[in-house]
Image 1: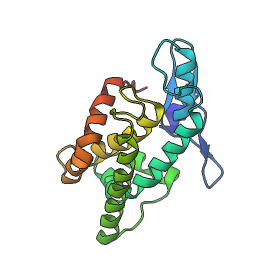
Image 2: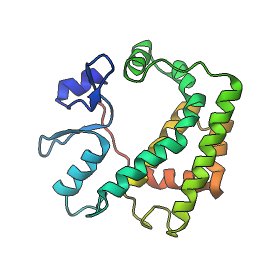
Image 3: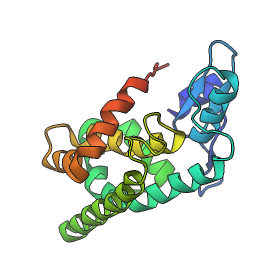
Image 4: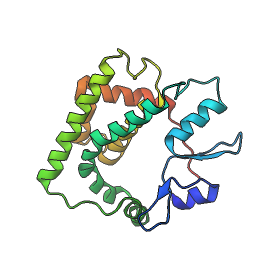
Length: 198
């Protein structure tokens, strides 16, 4: 991924502990304009500005709130990565795993009890998030159309489905949590998904 980011000219999104540049996904190369953008929120803002006749991801006046939402969501569900991180070994190449360790550090050595506690904490976090969504009556935060903030949450579910697999009992538990809201949101977001691998 880092090699691809560098090849297309995607800027780094941070700095590693050793001081070297850190490259993360997503990043885009817009063939129409030639622009190369890294970092989710910057990509959303670029798309809003460059393609004003499409649905807005970051409506005026919502940037800070959506950024805080994304950070809060991450804090509430990150604990379930104790369950999912070991799955990377089963489905990725050694080179990819080396990049993950370089970017984020080695996986934590968690006991089964710690993994289960993290899983339960992540589900409790989703119960909290569900309350925020219930206030609006639609599938997404602002009703029927997704915002950038919705996609930051959906990304966690894409990751879970990918790493666990759709037949895994834990994935099925997530998919049915909160009356199936998260599975419905993921399915609705699939209509907006598009990617080209370089």
